[in-house]
Image 1: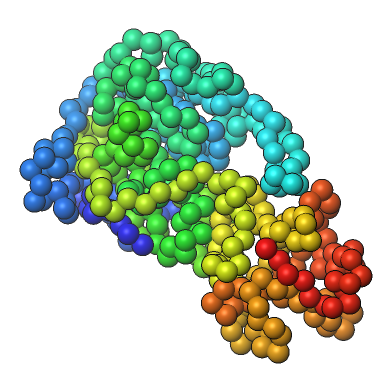
Image 2: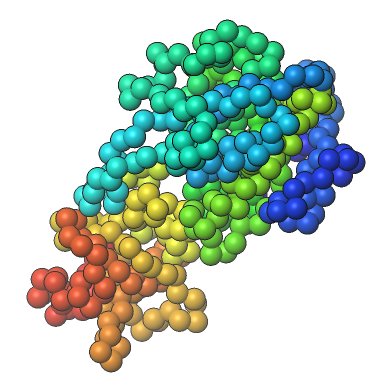
Length: 399
């Protein structure tokens, strides 16, 4: 795990974290005071940026909060509960739409309503929708059409790049984004997915300044971060997101308090440590048998299967793997042909098991398969539906 040396956090602040804060004990003791350190020490230009500190405010913020999913809900919920910080909160969400599930060849349409919309409406917060054609021509609600030192723009898992003309309506230090990684690691649209898929053991959450797109996505200075968050060995996107979301919400509230008190510090990111987390696509989910080990495939499955199931070519069509697991070396079926990508059916009493040889001498067991345009099937039923010549030979090449 590459960790940005942008911040160190001490327990000198008199403002305690909420008792329900989900941080590990060591992280909880370090969230409250933020100072610059690390590689900026030998870089005068970076020092100038890193030592930029905000001024104290006597008035509360007027907040424009932009988001969409459960990650953003946790941030809005935390800010909404910190009533001493804000005078008003307006919420901006993407439009409801039909989205495809299951990948290119097994797509089903579902009506998507942003979770943030539901939270905002249930809490009587003014809610605004970005047009389906995008945010470039969209104008914010009053009073955000006129710049003011009390206005704050917050984003979390919004899904839109904020154009420069909108950014300019807010003070530079009042444009903030909550990002579920330790920036500059995993800049981009899918940081949690790539954290899991890449096997990172440690991650974090960052709050960074929003900048114009030409400077790079998620490239702004860091105003707060939480480090040393362990990634469970069996983490999936859906099981790991809630923890990062709660941490992000508490961190955002602390950052806003520091902005209000005038002691928030922005630290530039270490450009030499950048990694990217591109959007998950249908091609992302294609299994590369000659490159990926069984553990690689399992991590990718756990990171992205909530969006699209892993798939492979099979008998002139596609097979999507709904449930799978890597075999321990002690369980490897050494008696089978280990040609990479070859799947073997093993009869075990009345049950059937499917093993596929992967890269690096590893084996994957597939428990549930969905062929293109068909419903998911357990291995025995799936195998019985294959051509007779495949069933007779007991194996089939994938990929």
